[in-house]
Amino acid sequence: MSGAGRGNMERIVAGIVTFNPDFAVLADLVATVAPETAEVVVVTNSPMPAEERARLLDIAGDTPIHIDDPGGNVGLGEAYARIMARAESAVASRVILFDQDSSPPPGMVTALSRRLSALLAAGERAALAGPLPVSASPDHKPPTVHPHPDGRVVAEARAVWFAISSGSLIDIAAFREIGPFRGDFFIDAIDVEWCFRAWSKGFSCWLADDIPMPHRLGGGQLRVPVIGWELPVQSPLRLGTYARNQAALLGMGHVPLRWKTRICLYIAAQTLAYWLADGGRTARPRAMVKGFAAGLAGRLGPPRA
Image (cartoon, rainbow, N blue to C red; front, side, top):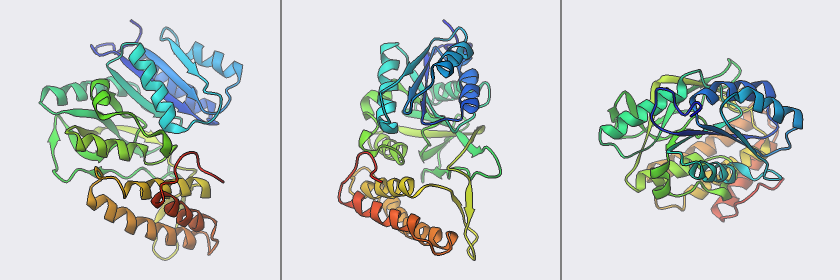
């Protein structure tokens, strides 16, 4: 069995979702994860030239690579569904998800799988184990980690409310009980909603601080005058979707009240901060306000320009 976790008894499939990727970063990602997995699945939410497909097949070496072209941008949730279905048909026991903005170090997949096995052996109903996301460059803001309030540390991993989807190693048996990622969220907060749902069903989510993964959040960062915040550079459309999906969480019973309170205050502060950072221009703040209203009204699906 190629890769499949050399030194690891679990059969792991790596799933990668792309949209107009930097091919050099994608090629490095495939080269890194292929030796540690049984199969690599790439869902292309934008057209991939034939020469790039051929190059990825070559880079994967002995590890099979399946390139899934859904014929358009179906979003992250639907792409994850395609990856999970492929993994189940390949009789995998675990799936590790990536987007094109992550650069895992060699050995990360195997290390996470061992950590997940240790959590399960310790009696935890672990749905996933993720790495510590760190900035891939000084120009990018690292994702924020949200520790679970119970403060548990087991098998050198700490409980977190959620882990970002990229880099998350998911137990397929747990996934079957928790249910699929939400396709109607399209992008943003898909991992947040799924992990809250996992906790509500008696599962748990974990992060390994000693297993870092460089990640690129947005297109860089903006510094907010006066208050000094660092904000990720995102398009108005993307910020609108982010605000929309966070607002949609407000009506879900499995989402903790403390998160609902936090996100209302935080999005209000972010809206003001983007206005300051953009020198009074309103494109991003308006997109966030409109998106939040759409989320409250339950208008989900692919974002509308």
